[in-house]
Amino acid sequence: MDYLSKMTDEELALAYIAGDNKAFDLLLSRTQTKLFTYIMFVVRDKDMANDIFQETFVKVITKLQQGKYTNSGKFGAWLVRIAHNVVMDWYREQKSEKIVEPTEDNDLSNLSGNEILDMNVENHFVNEQVMHDVKKMMNMLPPTQREVVFMRFYQEMSFKEIAETTGVSINTALGRMRYAILNLRRMAKEHSVVLQLD
Image 1 (cartoon, rainbow, N blue to C red):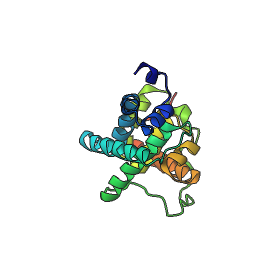
Image 2: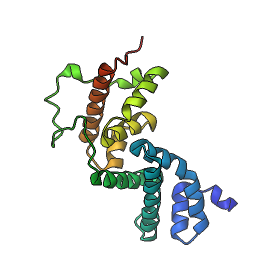
Image 3: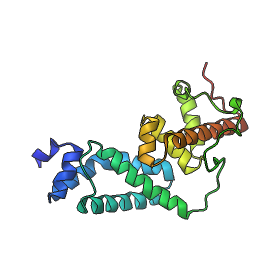
Image 4: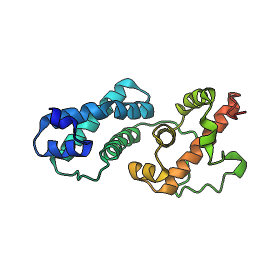
């Protein structure tokens, strides 16, 4: 198994497709923590996260065995996309209450400029207390908004990568971030949480 440890995730996936089950065991051990963290952050329920994690890996195994994976150098992104789809399927079955939802064409013209936080929000997320407060409020966001915030600030993905991973346009990903920021600002105001840094 030592030869496997030198392989990339992509090479392990291809080795598994070729019949090496140990390659998949190593691939699972390498990716499970990051993937479970992502799922848990989005669904906020350990039992549900475990179910979605299991379903994700069943789909991964199935897709690998069906030859639906090609070495693109982005196994991790492919894995997160499958998890995203499983999570979204689960949420479609739920009747969750929305805070602010965008219009069908993601038109933001109904929002005035002073309601939207400056897009250079990365600079405001340095302070630990702000991050702690923001994380608590993020748990109250709708899943699509919580997911884009997580991918952008915790996984440091670009909006292009977020759009590709979640299967939406860059404008939709940006729109979800804007609505998330709007909701976070509203919640901060309601709970007298200061998000501005000195």
